[in-house]
Image 1 (cartoon, rainbow, N blue to C red):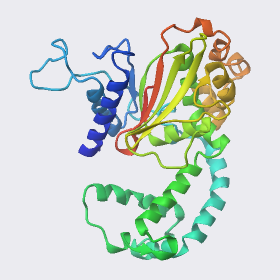
Image 2 (cartoon, rainbow, N blue to C red):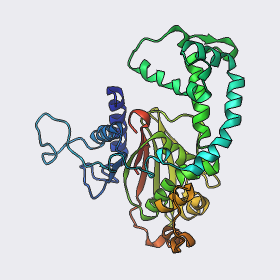
Image 3 (cartoon, rainbow, N blue to C red):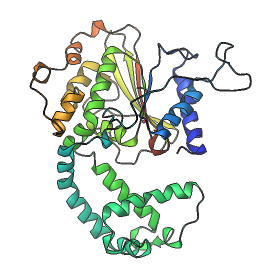
Image 4 (spheres, rainbow, N blue to C red):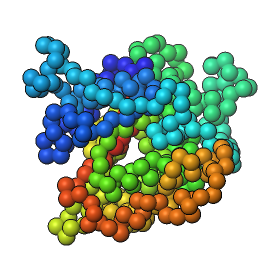
Length: 356
């Protein structure tokens, strides 16, 4: 369920996009030929998309105002069939045995280090939560959901706010959040893990940049984390609600096209430094640097995950079609496009892409 606070955050993000991109880039009046919106089928994600779009495209003209006094207009939000897997926008829910096997090996030393570092806190949690000897590091990290209860002003026991001098005077909840952060980032902070979770969506980004096409994708925080770590721009922090990862495409005076990645979180916009390429990366170099991290089709994703075997065909043996396009920058539109991946994380999701 998306809270009123979440709706306000998404609406504010939409207003930011309206101020930055309408008129000069897309029409201030919604045009389905200019903006494509896709979301996962999660109810909070679909609600997030509507709140965001109301901020970006509030009805202003007589043609848009269909109900006097109602500051809202219906805008199409595309989604998958309910219950169907969505490896593009929700790859962390996609069954990938190869990923799970890799993660099983990686998480063991991480869990041991957490157990050693936060031994006293874990003992308290085992006692106060009633979980007892069944408490694991994973179960301890899941207690992060307490933050949602606090957001709804629900009362909490005193042990939640207890301060720990041996841990820089952080509270129990602070430490739970840190345990969750360590495990959450570790799920993506490895090239093999990042590729299996972010490679398919990175391929979509590559194609859209090369075609200078626009889209708005409503995603979850895991999607953005997979994408960020596949490119090597993760900051080892959790993705806040209503964050946005934005890919902008510019055409220089020399006729070449450059990619710039912006990250907006907590209302602050920053430019990400692209590894080995700087803050503005010529698109052919960008593709060259990260094409090895892409997974070029859903069929290939299944095959690499070990879910089912795909037949060996030309698609598996040849470079992806968009890779050839990077040798032909002259074929790109004169009006450079912008690709936005927005993360609205957990309350409301993040081409434009965004996260719940």
